[in-house]
Length: 408
Image (cartoon, rainbow, N blue to C red):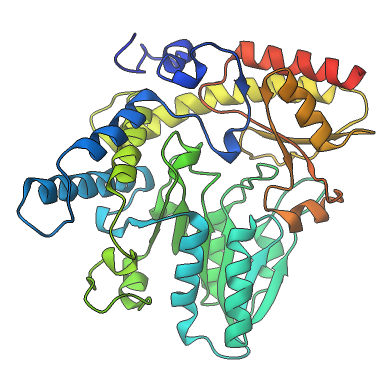
C-alpha cells in the first residue's frame, strides 16, 4: 500500500481510495458524502493513538498533560491552515449546531427590541433556528431572504433588499447542503457591512470542497465540520479577533478567559482533535508544497477538478432519466445533485439504490425552508454528492442503477 495519497502532478483516485478501509472491497458506492464522508486509515490511527498514549488534562507537567497540549496545539494549527486564520482563533465544538447556538447566544447579548437578524431559505436549519430563537428572546425582528428557485442563486441584491440600519447580523451559508449553491459571500458581506451589520457564515458544506480564506471571504464568523472532510464528528468556529475578544459567552468561572478556550466548555476531546489534524494533513498530502496552507490550496484545487468531472457525468446521466427534475442549477455550486423523479418518492429511490449498494441521501436534509421554497413535498428529494474518493466506476454503477430503478 502507498504511504501517501500524493501522486505526480495529478489526482490518483485509486491511490487515494487505497487508504479507506470502507472502500477496500468496493462493495458499496458512497454518494452520501454531504452527510458525512468515509474515514481514511491515517485518521483512525491518529484517534486510536491519542486514546492509547499517556493522556491527561492539560495544565500539568506530566507526560499525559504534555501529550494533550501537543494534540490541541497541532489541531489548532491545522485548522488555522485550512481556514487561513491564526491558530488561537480555532474554537472547538461538539457540532456546528452546538457552536451556532453557543455563539448566537453570546453575539445577541446586547440586542434590543427592534434590532434585526437576517436568515436565508438556502441555509441548513442549524444556521436559522438559533437566530430565530435569540430574536424571540431579545425582541429582535427576523428578516428572511429567498433564493431564486429557478436558478438556485442567492444574490447580494436579494440580501440588500432586507437590510436596514437596525440589521445586527446576516446568517448565511457558504454553500447549500441541499442544492450545492455557492453564494458570493464576499459581495454579500460588502453590502451587509455597509449598513453596520455582521456576517455569520455556515461553511460546513463549503469547506468540504474548497479552502477558506477568512481575509477575502468577508465573514465575521465562520463554522465548519471536519467530518464532511474525512475527519471525525466535531466542529470548529472562528471569527474576527476584535469581535471574539468582546464576546462574553456563558462559561465556568475558573475556566480560562483566553481565546479560544473561553468558548470551549469542559475538557476537550483530544482524540477527536488528533483525528482532525490527521484529516487535514491527509488532504494536504495530495499535493505537497512548501507549507501546509499552500498544500491544502493546491490539493483542494486538484480534487475539485476530479469531483467536477464526475459531477458533469452524473448531471448528464441523471438529466436523461424519464420524469426527472434537477434542482441544483446555480452557476457556482459544489458537486451536489438534488433531483426528483415523477411517480417515485425520494425514499423509494434511495431504498432501491441501497438494495444495489449505492448510498445516496433522501429528504430535505435539515433545509426544510429551502425544500418548501423549491416546491418539494415533505418527502424531499434525492441527493447525490461527490467526494474525493468517488471514481468513474462508482458513477457507472450509480447511473446504471438509476436506469434499473426507474424502469421497475
